[in-house]
Length: 204
Image 1: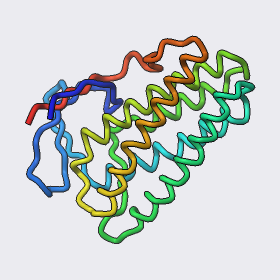
Image 2 (image 1 turned 135 degrees about the vertical axis):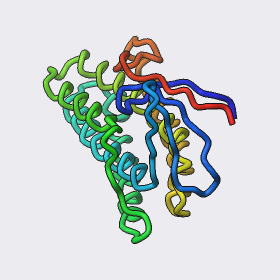
Image 3 (image 1 turned 60 degrees about the vertical axis):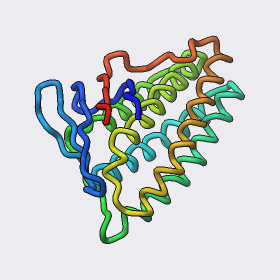
Image 4 (image 1 turned 30 degrees about the vertical axis):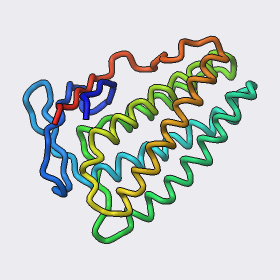
């Protein structure tokens, strides 16, 4: 697998993915300060649930405020898809051998909440539409990176199956966000968080 690059808000540091033994149920990353963090299956489940939950609220807000048909349709699609994924994740988390646990160094949820708060403070105009779409491009790019970086922590079969379904879903959302961005006259790869950390997975 080739090394990939992207943005992921995890403790605001540069992360290097380290190879783990197959089936270990853990992924280790090393920060730019040399600190080693262990990302477990429970951490992965919590990350996904938090992301879906905030994403749904952001999309509901956009669907209610926007006057742009393309943005509204996109927002409604996000609500439907992420609600379905959230329900599936909660079922997985309820399994006695899975569960969920927050990782303090994973600040992606806090970053998404700040993005939601920012949107809530904006007027319902074209500026709101562009910021919403920009946030969606950034969020979905980060989530695809997160699955590639930390998906190895999944050891439960149901969770593994969920990740396989989630990847094409996120890719479809990202493609739709870029298409809507083009309709709004935005650069397709505009990101909402230029200060986000760079992730460099290590070649196996």
